[in-house]
Image 1 (cartoon, helix red, strand yellow):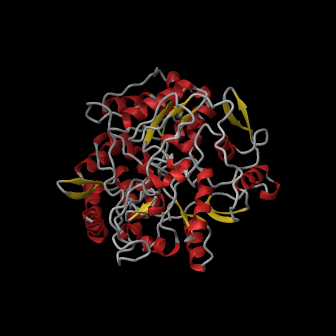
Image 2 (tube, one colour):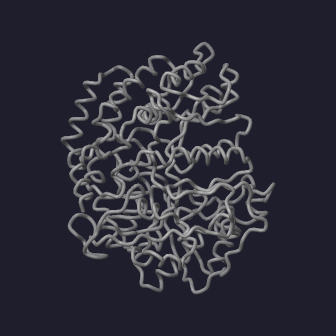
Image 3 (cartoon, helix red, strand yellow):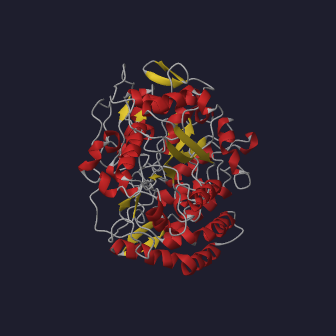
Length: 554
């Protein structure tokens, strides 16, 4: 099973079957089974299979969104997904009160991640975590990707279900959720969520588009902005190569000129170095306006593969490769992308939005800038291909009686503690003086300190705020989101479930990406691409389309 790398969130292919935020959900061309996954309609009530992989019920009231009011952001968020920005951390931090909790029985969790290199019993961060919850936690980790999927399936098949489990799509995914995990829809509907104020701080869109299946909420999302990808540039390298900032592109020709200006084959310098299909083609698709996976045109679901815009994007990318702006090993060794960028071999870096701030903090000498992508033919900023408003895998809760479910939701509420609180620091930074220190109004990690409990996928709030000691970067990121998100392109399949996308489409991942690579390198032609699309359409695409259209009608 493809995976989303939490640290880099790098795509290694298009929605054609790339290892991307979308393929995590569908095995390939983006299903909405999980994470991007989402709200599908149910009519029979919780726990009653409908024969389609899930339950059916009348549209449920979503959880209310009640933003945390304990701290005022320097830059406010918006209802459409722009996240708030903060220039400093409250001193002293706000205490939520009520901790340590009482009446919580020991709990277990299965998460994607790496087991701690310091035994929990010897790790002060784990001790603080358990002390604040008033109980013992038993956390088990599985490697990202197919290994985790296997571990999850084996765990469920064995019947020893953990209290919390990060879930990835499998065949008949909604039915599996019905049988194994708690339906939280009515428990958290509307103002019911106010019982858990930190969970109420999670935007409604994250519950609906990330943690819902067939219109029923089956887990807790980790909120993030639907920000898509960005193209960052090392300002120091651009200046050395004669390009002074800020860099503003008005159309595709400007992008070509920029890439050629920072490419010098005699010095081994190139504009770009990542997986060409996964990143370069992806931003060209954005600039020419292909659907964001699926779109609805003339009342019909249309996939990006099927459009003339996709053929145009392939042709443009082919031309860029002919111009030599990409590292010659971009096809054979794209894993060197970060190394090339850090070493000054390449000067442009396409990545998920969340990577921008991290690079600025760790490499201030780079003078990292963000270069906004225009429409290919000009006319303003290209609509971003919006990502889901949260990490693309939610955390489900084991079927439990009302009292136990309340206990587990209180645990989740602690982990979701909002920015500005003492509890947020505990969850995200650990023990002060042991794994972080406060410096200039900001918590700063102590190098090589013991890890924190890896459970922040359970509603953790750190990805839902902009924060940093560099106010200019926080402001620049907030300004960018304020322009990008309102006009971004949505994936029409979000909130709709397709069994074909989950169980059958994965077999097309490799062949479709292979064809794209061959065409872009001119070893095949666009006619070969058209034939590949026709095979995809006949064998899985039309089935996915029909399932999405049926789900949309429901």
